[in-house]
Every structure is written in C-alpha cells, then in structure tokens.
Image (cartoon, rainbow, N blue to C red):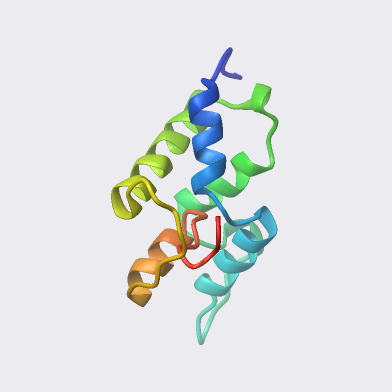
Length: 111
C-alpha cells in the first residue's frame, strides 16, 4: 500500500543525507557482506536497513510505503545525529564511516 503523501522536507532530506548512488550502495553492501568463506546473494547482501534504503532509491515517490517512510526518517535521524547540520567531507574512524555507508551515507563524499 503506497503512502498517500510524504513531506517535501523528508523526501529532500533523505536524498541529501543518502549521498551514495544506488549502484555505489549496492556495490558497498555486496563488498561488506562478502566473507572469506561465503558471499551473500546480491539481493540479500548487506544489513536490512541498507537493503531497504537501496529499495527506496529505486522507487518513485508515489510508490513509497509507510515502512519506507519510517526507514527514511530513521536514516535521516542517524546521519544527522552523527554528522550534525554540516555534511562537508569528514574523516573519522573506519567503523563509524562503514556504519554510515551501510545506510547510504559516505562521510568522505563531497556534498
């Protein structure tokens, strides 16, 4: 069931904080889930939130579900709580960067 309306603010903010393209995110999720002994099927690669973000990036605004909107709100909240108002490129620890990249935000990528 599609959501009848999503705010312009959330739509814009989500697409601002998710600064990786769907291709970049898909490749990252596949790389992250590849292990020494196993590799996930591409459709199952990565953490659930990252896969959901990838799914949202492939949708039109009118096709979003309430679950999509909840994920969008959560991703915006996570990125803003860790980055603040500025999304200027910023180096940090590997785990911190990879955690953000798991949800589609590369803190080293220029805005």
